[in-house]
Length: 242
Image (cartoon, rainbow, N blue to C red):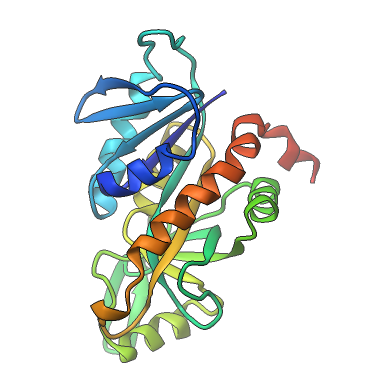
């Protein structure tokens, strides 16, 4: 089974590919370049849910094209991966999170009574649920916390906004900008999705001096090194069984 991993930017893509052994191949697909190592194709799809959805859709439509020594095979799993902000202290800097829910936190409408999610407006969806057995297996392999990860189009920059997000989404562990877009594209291709985040900063006031991007990228590499056998060997029938 081939696995497609979608990050926002090249530095995240490279952190993921460092986790895998073997020589790297590069395969061009419309709008992107796949960095292939073994069963894993990794691409930097761009920041935000729209860019992530478009890049994921193009890659899935390409059908994991053959190149060099690699044979063509369909993707059996898509993973949204990268660094992100976390609602600390539950998830401290440098820790790992695997999403048990991928939530569009700001897709909807502002009203006099507050924010309404798109589902309350009577259309669309605002949440995807990754395969529970896979979430448990990846969390066990990596030591990651499991919980909802919010997708936002504007990164949170105040304590008030952080509090509002937590009030609207109790139990949320982190926010990032791509997961829901990746999940939307994967769902339309009928491919299961997962989201893995390494914590680089706290959600709230922007304090760049407190960010630990290097530590988060190293944690991301470590996570995929530990999770690779789980991801490559996962079978969707496991979730049907429990």
